[in-house]
Image (tube, rainbow, N blue to C red; front, top):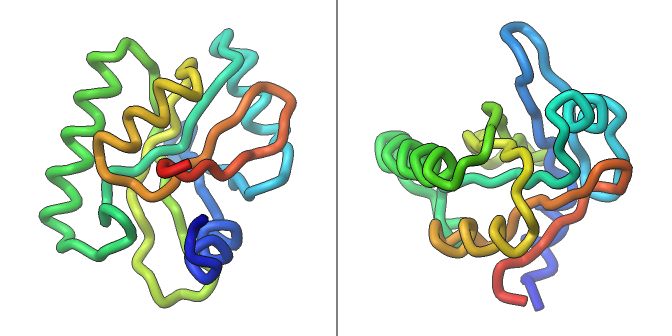
Length: 140
């Protein structure tokens, strides 16, 4: 079972997606996103994941360390054959720096969980076209 404070922090985070320059939309746990559904429909995808490689197990690393990890994640996503968009997780409390992330299109839940585990992430967002955003823990 995840730490209740950490769980609440993840659930209150705003997860920003940047589909094009000067455009963004927000994902929130438990909500259905019309903007995401339009994006998935246009990309002919049913499934998606919001994944970061930053700050493994919610332990802060330096900006340089996180940049290297994000480059490795982008390479893994490309090698997996998935499309992705830049994204950013922004905590509600303001006591944690925003985390660079990727919205990965067309990835199945099992593949996304494996990728998140590869980068030692505590959790990620998963979803399917038309369904609410779901927070998933990598240890369950």
